[in-house]
Image (cartoon, rainbow, N blue to C red):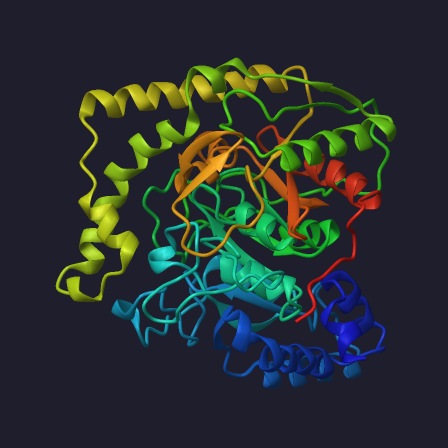
Length: 468
């Protein structure tokens, strides 16, 4: 039974709890047992939440007494360790913050608990949540459950590894340039970066640069992403970017009033792409065409004029460095690779900064033009499947690029604030997951969830999970 529980999705677990097929205590204990069994190899978990079993017992009592239950009642969830959890260690991947226990939950965590979720554990990340691998001086390196010699990505790499390996059905990650969608691609799970501001970032560090940071759900099914997002979305009166309406309609299971129009691309403007990855994007597009959607290959000229990764780099360094300086002052001997790298980077000149701001506006205009004609866009998430630990340079489609290029297809959504879903649709010849990215217009999460749900129904890799 425990094997069935750890690879059941959150929606199923909530239904089983609600109908008394299983108790919250059994569900939580099954996931704790899985952590004890496999995490010594994966190293995704940094802290088991105090009181998880006690919370499960309280949840069970509510079921037995017939009380009204939330949509996630009795379901365990995990949280990236940059997100505050009340009286549970939140150490941000750095010995500088060792022993830190916040007084209150981040808004996103509080909303998961309000829906009945049970905080199970905190998950690993890079130092300060800032790199594409999850490794730090405090809790070490996380490994990919599909191949321990490879990375589960960053910065939400511990979260993606935990969910992929069955240690958690559902979790929260953050995304500055890649960090929810990239790790999902490297471990073969599903995640969503919502429209900027849809989910408050209150209680999450670092906040600089505020306009690029997002928090989003990570899971193993599209319906779990929709369910979690329905609980997370909406303003909290504390994050000024979170101003969109709290009302939310996932749109899954409904027949659209007209034919959905989408384009797909792997080409100019997104950097070089591995042939296997490009083929998977095309296969996903063809599958959607077979399902009755209008599909065509497209290009977005704005992406070719202004390479979004370069735009992002020119903008965020100026805003990020002060936060890093403040955090590390007096603790320079406790800095790891990325804090040192960030602080060593030259400041962007004001002329270049303003030009980058204008380039970001041109990118937003380019996407606005695209979404005036199409409802969604399919691209790759990463240009290659999960790579070996510590690789800093790649040859992709004959072009040599540094590791930052892994963000080339994801960072445009952070620069523009558009929503995107990462979901598996293929497997590399080496047995590693390949995800595709479904992008929608601003506030159009219901549309991309609908498209993702269609794809999930015909996915050739649905239900696969690593064996550890």
